[in-house]
Length: 118
Image 1: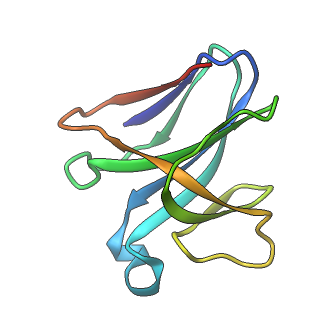
Image 2: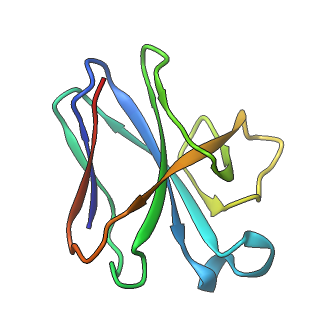
Image 3: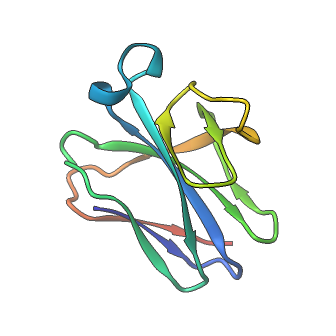
């Protein structure tokens, strides 16, 4: 299980990218994308319940209510104002932005928590 813990002083929203060749093979780049999980300060959210052996690597993007962002060089992930479930590099005119994500390696852990801090 992949978790996010919000230790930032404002609410944050999280989107993830994960290896998914069955549903996102070919033009989907083999990576699925999902968002949003809204997490209040001090809160934790479970964002992915998948096979850790199959999904050792994930990527994430987060944005805070005060404008802070956690971003990186991975993706081109189309994000929307409402919840989404798509594939990397696939978007529509309804997207409000294209973001990059930070890569994380969960190793051999069955449960892994990413803590968002200032």
